[in-house]
Image (cartoon, rainbow, N blue to C red; front, side, top):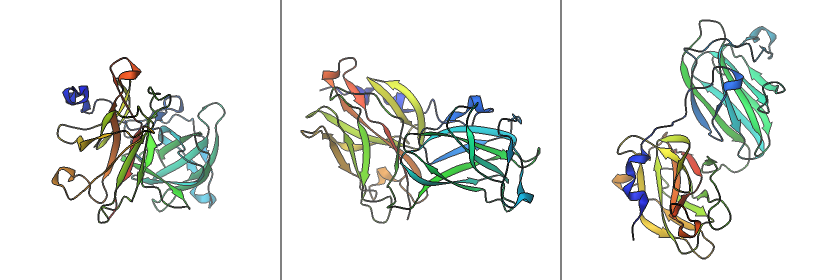
Length: 290
């Protein structure tokens, strides 16, 4: 049995990683449901799209300078917190992804370099996020980190929705156990897919924009040697679900360290789906802790 996935290892190299933010609202970078993503406003212009950032106290209010934009989709309903970890700037969240009608729902212009915004989000809804300097000379790099407030913490978050396979639905990854390196109890599952067909989970350090691959899309990449396949191959059960556990004490999984963010996906054979005869799940991002 031939596995096209194994003969196309070169395609796992990063070619379409997430960038650093769009220069205007209309060019907002789609980061899907990523819970942490980088920004760089060094070469950005002041678009004027965001208007004023009204906060409490009023003395902290100001304009958005050298702003960069992202479109983010809520993976679940509930309260979310976004924080700016980088320059001393302004952070704003807007309801919707239509630049003409989106209304600012929360904004923070902290004088203590601790820009944090909180807002209620609805699963599947899109939100525009703007990061900017507090004056015309405040530029640099950093990350915007998002977390859900309240409820049991999820192991990770899905991103990069894939297409339907021969089961009639798209395969999605889920995780049980925890993101704790010390606990070493991570279990990955994916489905539904074609029952009785083999597949393999893999992961890497780079989240990609959906890149056509086989009958679906590849969402994970990295430089040579950083994209890891989780052996052995697994076979989907009667419901089309496949699962695997990961022993992070195995040297091949040395990237699984506290503070590391890794992105996971599942490749599987799907001869009934026609085309290339294989497909993939969506992506799943895990930020590992102690």
